[in-house]
Image (tube, rainbow, N blue to C red; front, side, top):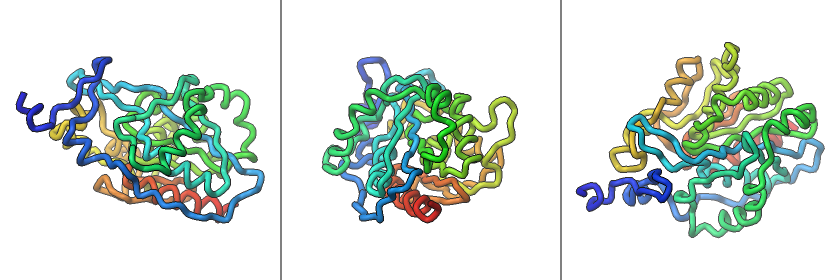
Length: 283
């Protein structure tokens, strides 16, 4: 009752999951992003595609059994894609089983016309995404057509994707074929797939920006999460030999070899710019 009065009680959704409290939304989301339109020298070469791996799952079970209503964070997903599109790239949008892309719509920047218009333009593709397995079976040999793989963040990126062998195959494929891998916030959970079947961690000794476990541990206090996370991402990556360059959920971005990472939704605009710059300089 007191939490409801103070606005720090997570909101109960119709499916029994919880979305962030009023206070958490006020503190952690924005109605307008810092997206800046950049005029790039458009790329017209052969490697014009970006593979984007989204989550199709919505509910994360916390340590206390409560479900967090999550998915892909819209700002983390859309801003980097907007920059890449401005630079001339097109996108193959996939989810693990081909089900529609799930977004954390409670985090959608409703007063940002650039983002709203871009979302409307691609809404049909998000709703009719392709199946990752089909890409692995049919398109994985077409490395000459791709410049990068992008895995957006949002807590939903930790649902299924870190255990998906097909994601691991894609990341190994990207690494072997000198493609860029772009990810941010909780998206680096996808990098754990390279350790499946007792394989060595592909990104050992890499510098990367990742959403800090310390912040995830604090957010239940303001009702952002309805309980503690089932496991910690940044500490898991550290234990495998990753060098985490940030301690806050801030605008930090990092480029190490062909891995481009960002710390949080606040880094989405800078991540897009960095990814475009890195890709164009290497094509």
